[in-house]
Amino acid sequence: MIVMQPVLEMDAPDGFDLWPVAEIASFTFLPLSGELSPAEVGTAVMRIAGCNDIDSDGDRPPHPADALDSFLHGLLTFDDLFAAGGLRVTDNSTGVAFLPGCCDGLEDWRAWHRFVDDGILLGFGHAPVSPVAERFGDTVRLTVNAEQSDSPVIQLSVAELRDLLAGAERDLADFLALAADWASRHLPGHRTPVTAALARVLDLPAPATPQEP
Image (cartoon, rainbow, N blue to C red):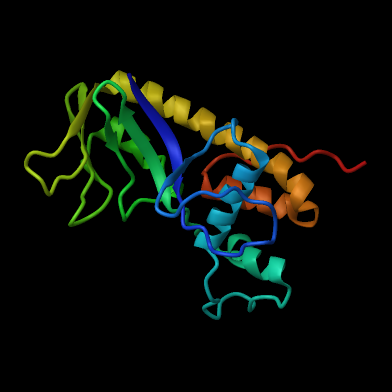
């Protein structure tokens, strides 16, 4: 059975205390779905915000002095947001996993749809590891590392890939709904902008915001 999951590549900073997070090792992947615990949602939001927590370049106001506002500053002010990760494809029958590459970002996950439609080679990294997706008629070949002539591959039909993409989109939408509820509990003063920013980085419509009592 072949499965596809939207995942974040983790790089958890030591001593993070702005909200509760789960202990997840760096350089592993956190699958996103509606099944995450509150602490795992907090970890995902931390990671996405952290990916965009860089110094202002002069086009935006400087980081605020408040620690929470400063950490969220990039997430809430960047036009082009980034989230380390992408779509992970695993063939459970062989154990082969096609992982996001160094040039991949979860914000670009819809590029898979364009690949399915136009068949143009889709690359996710460069040497020493270059994951590549290719289409040959109605067949898709996912090469784990195009730098190796004997690289493991995953092969599936275009129809299968379309179904997997639909499932990945549902997982992302379910995660976003979960994150919106999480933000209302843990970041009540930032709920609306944080949810909107997460929707932008996931390239999904923002969930409806509950009316204030």
